[in-house]
Image 1 (cartoon, helix red, strand yellow):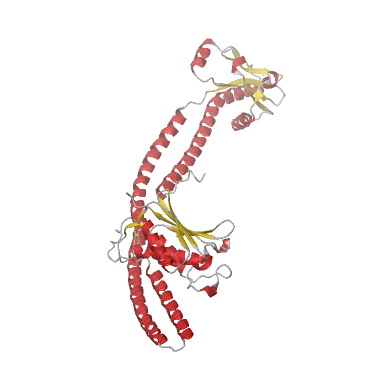
Image 2 (image 1 turned 90 degrees about the vertical axis):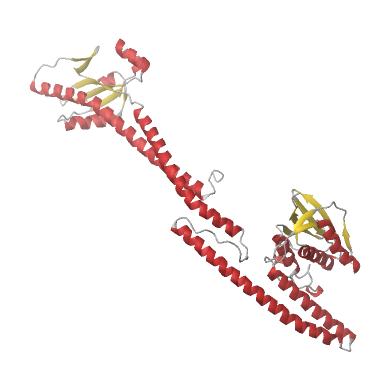
Length: 451
């Protein structure tokens, strides 16, 4: 059912109106059919009621009653038994109630009123009626029996003309006209509403903090226009806030780097070599953490355009930095794969993944492969892995794990968060998964550049 339900506002509006109109027309059709059936019964019952009342009045006054003919049969007869029961006709309780009500309204109150449906196939009609039946629906032939107060029965006949298809054709034509008019009007209205909403959706999807972005045109109904105005105002405020944030981050970076550089100079003059080394390493860690924080905060506001990059060469360059310091990092052979991106950011993300693998897993094995229009970089280590429940939480800023990720081994807790933010900014994804047995795999996927 969900698969058939439209996703768009336009589709849902049209479907709901169509369903509501269908239900309304179905109810209208049922009421018209019922009214038509009542009218046809009234047309057939009127003459029968008049004849039965006339016969009853004559019997009361003692006037002679001659059998009235219905084609080849007596239309009204006075008998000692009910013809409905004698001839074994299927009784119709609804018609019995209606006929009894009609007789009482006409001033005649019979003891019992019975109405039975006659099987026309067992009742040979006159030739003229037989010719009509060959081309039309046969009428309903009913046997009517009304019991007098003295116990005698007035037996008669009643013929109800068949219902025509005129009402059905009228309802169908009415429905088609209503559907056409309403759906056309709804189409125009939905276009007037959905067009500005599509523009707003596109602006939200492509939202950037650039101040040169054109505002969304304000159009549509008042509610939609107010929403667009609010979005345009919000975008201006967000752009101003991001500008202030960048200015603040620049000031923080400058104000912190200056004392850190001064501390580095003072640390170099400490006579104790072990103490000097610890101080220098601490200052270096603080500087690296500061760089990571500023880089993570500035993502999403690039200051350079993407360019075609040979990702295989970029990965090899990142690995070469680790090989220079003797880190156990291997790169499997791969074909040349080109992506669009910023070399400095992607290289930093790859370095963070390799650094995590070497730091916590003892070694890193890197491979590149093509997969359905994307390039996948896999970085495997031989460490203890990560608990399945924590595979996503490690991407949160400053997240650190005990056990499989020893805090004593260092790290600011920003490496994976920064790497995923860089990858997602390039339209890719970064995930972790445990290898069978032991070890952890980092999977970095990026869209391939269109040739």
